[in-house]
Image (cartoon, rainbow, N blue to C red):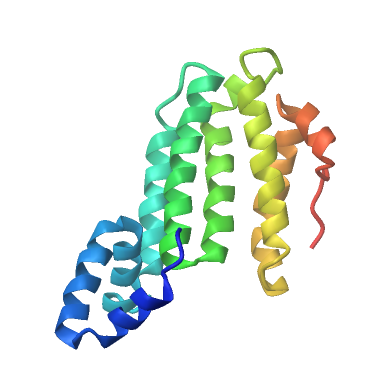
Length: 184
């Protein structure tokens, strides 16, 4: 993003309030994520975070039940869900929700599609690597949360690690040094 020149800054500061408001509204309307973030913070006052999480959980459930034909399709579906979680994070700054929803995503996809990831082969390679890297990311993010939350995530993390070390991503899990069990 280019820096604003000092002369332009001074000129903007001197503009009338009405002109600034019009300009601000035009600029905000061009950035969809900023618009949604302002809606969440100013209109909803941050009170709709649970509803937003529930919508994403419902989307995860529907997407996981699509029964992908190949590990590649499964990975594409997981990436689509990850995009929604990333947007949720950009809008709400919900770090707890990001970890919770990503854990829920991986475990739900395994619950419904484990047969596609049972064995490591050329078809499951990309999905296996993706899942291992996402799991690594989750483990790094969960330790940044308040330790009081650890007990809430322990069962889900250990379930995911069990899947990881006994299915296609096992090779990548070893490479990344992922534990076989997560201790609270």
